[in-house]
Image 1 (cartoon, helix red, strand yellow):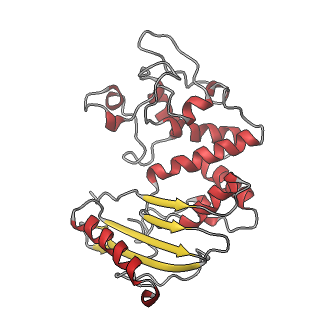
Image 2 (tube, rainbow, N blue to C red):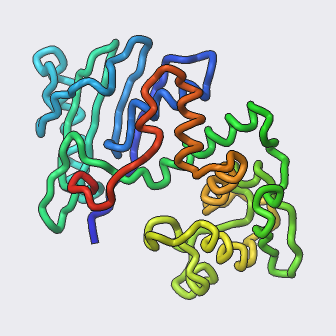
Image 3 (cartoon, one colour):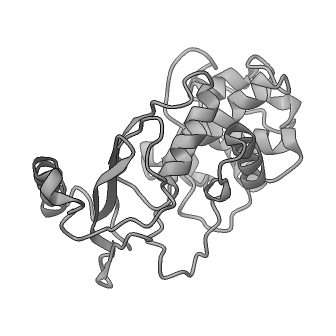
Length: 283
């Protein structure tokens, strides 16, 4: 089993103030899928994230000009690695259009001793939630869906019931806000209902079709009536399939299309989230 990576980030987008959706996708275009722990200060005219970056094991980039910053960040990184809070990371910091810190540290595959490099590909995991949520809100802006639309408009078979057998209405808003009454398998006991019907949390059953996972998910009673309680859950997985159904396309294609429209002439290859599962770059 490969080591678990941290998912910490500090993002301060300063551009595209008039269009939050565009600003969001610009930030994720900058982050891409090659960083899991990132500290970025973005300002208008900031550095091109596709330019060659002199990553180093020490984090030294123009070190003579910003030694105090590098010292502080390296201390945080080294401590996190030493305490096994993360296994590996890539970090890049840009200030006023110039890259002032870049470091790749730790392991992409701890058991096989494979180090992290600047081009290591990290699985985004739950960081895809804000991407899918932003795509959903873009569809709302386009008038293709509404926040209070019932999910069954696009997913007619997704009708989970409460413990008393009643099947309440779950809306797009409920999915977006984690108030749909759903759960995660990792949040329940090993003999819990999600485990009994083998609901996938998203990473541990590669190849499982989304239709089958939604079928399993809908067979489990809801934790509470929709709209009553916030509970972190698989709601965004359901929302991702809803976005795909709205666009009559796969979710990656929908994300790429919506993201490209948001950034217009910006490069959008990052938004397609394509990677080869056998690649040596994948951690």
